[in-house]
Amino acid sequence: MRPTPIIDSHIHCGIQISNLPIDDISPLLREEGITGACMFAPVEDIYDRDDRDFEDTPWWRQTRHRANQYLLDLADQGEPIFP
Image (cartoon, rainbow, N blue to C red; front, top):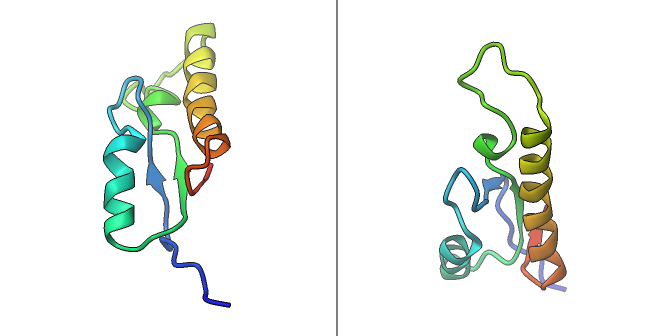
């Protein structure tokens, strides 16, 4: 059995506040022969890291949920990712 080549790190992938869609990332992974990658939602889609007094609001909770759901949906659609 051949070992699965993976990135020994993680990638941020998302389409809300940041613009890092899977359509931009997948070709790069394939080009390098990477068949699996750990992906996290971009920090900008999770909280405002520039606000030292960040307050979690319903808007941010919804944004965070959509960011995580995007990755879960990609995995469900067969993308070789580990959300």
